[in-house]
Image (tube, rainbow, N blue to C red; front, side, top):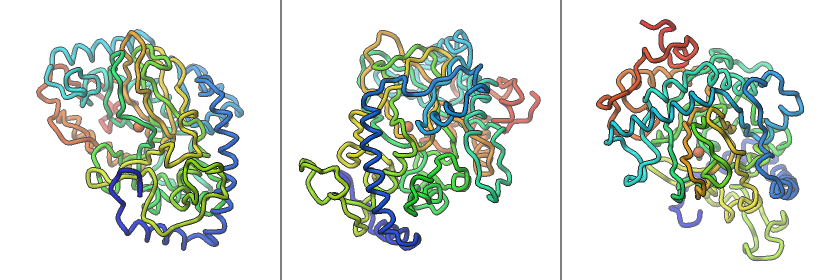
Length: 433
Ligand SMILES: [Fe+2]
């Protein structure tokens, strides 16, 4: 059983058996793969443990078209990228000032911690609406969306990676000194669904067939129809975000409450997807605990390590040093390089990420959450529902239910989105009425 959590229902043992039965020679092939993945993790984790924030690739927005093939491959493998100067510093700083003003004139906004609000249940302030629909932000999204591709012969009807969509999320203005422990290492966008939903599972079919080296986290095929929110749990995204993202509105350096990532999405996927099919045969304090010879294939339990029941659905994957020891998370979660206002950080939707617990700086660390979202039929249908919420100043469909923003001063409306690309991304008519 996962440590300290309620057990998963017995049907998840059936799910393991179904998965095992659906791939030829499953036990033999994934046992071989498991040994290889562990061996490669040993090397890669020791390299990452020696690395600093510069291990995370960085590129200027103006140079996106000049990224060479080698650098591109590095970015894709590491799974995260800092894109600098997507918008001018002054614009990002102005957005932060407007947000501060919004909070000042609307003291009833919901935020946590309640006595010193820093993370806000707000979606439709002018700053957020402007930032998400900014042509450069959307151009960066397109660039990221296009890192994905479909295999030949796969239908991509209704899909256009060059057409960006908007996914409204929140923002934070984190004050120095306050410890945050709400974001330990985790993966967003789909929990048990990664195994339970046939289309989502298809994203990992190479891994499950034992050919883990061929796994391509940027293959579109399974992503397009993946049901990432089977249980409709609040805060579980139901859309396909190619990358999750942050837009910085202040300077934030490592140790100042910034984002941390496990910088090898190929390998973390391979390990996390196969982890539920193995268990250690010796205790964690034994010598050689990490050796492949001390782990055995076992599909008898319903447990999926790092997956937890929550709010009528499931949360996680939340890898931990105890449950996923080969990731060496204590040494491998790398802080992203220092960002400045107008810079962005993007991480692939499968990347294990966390937020630094401490903020040792002296200034606010302020970011808006803005992911990259391509046009797909499922995404467009969400955007249409999201648009209705926007026009009524209510919370977007994927998020916790609660009061809308219609009573607040300074909420954005459809006329606040001027750029055609921004209007289209919101599902609005191209020209302002
Ligand atoms: Fe997250």
